Length: 332
Image 1 (cartoon, rainbow, N blue to C red):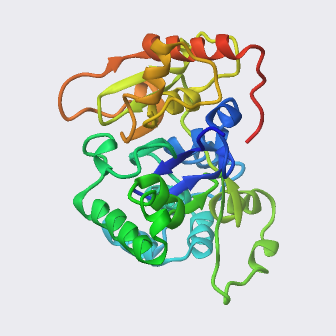
Image 2 (cartoon, rainbow, N blue to C red; image 1 turned 180 degrees about the vertical axis):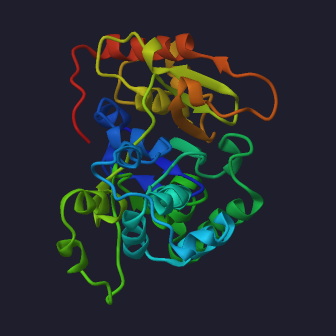
């Protein structure tokens, strides 16, 4: 039959649905996984904000409201209490307000983002030893998380003793208790019942456009532009997107999956030599924390320097692609 593989976010207690609910690794590995990529990026403010601030034609002149006599610290506190629609309308009235409110808008954008950055991620096979949590990567689970898995297994032992021996593992526990996550690259704001939806209709021209960027109910996220890298924050290693040489539409998402697989048995539904099979079955990065940033915005490590492992990761990806023949990376 072959084992099912799923991508788990241990910190968010989430399952990435882009793999399909119950599929073998080879059946979903070559999908595009663009939403998984987006979830690992760190959103930034839309470029339109700075464009509006620089444009005298599309923005009102500076105003001198008594509210601007308050310190920025007090304004930050006031802005934090306003809903998205009210804050957007206030920012539209004055360049100074919009400039001061930029950190608050950025905070809210990142709050709406379904981020998997800086989270423990593992691509787990269902054949991972079902009777011993020590079969997982060392240090993956906290003591409380281990206790939760064991409690679930004990509960299953009472309800169905025949299935209990398969329950004392993260795959079974997470499949039952974690939530499905689409990792969408689009966001949707929600408003209170008292929100006046007629308000945006009364806006015109650039004000209406700006309102849509700042507080529109549906929006797409903006990410920093530049050459991207996948950073393993836990190990201080990174993979350069520009350094991947495989002749397919392979991305940093595939690099992530190839390094985070973990199982007790090499059942992938993909062709691999024994050397690469062992590397894939016991991914060096399984359970680590990640983010995707540009080369010039890589986070500073607490200890040591970043290590480029692009060549090593590319070697595994190239082998998988070469062994798998002519493949077309499909949509999620």
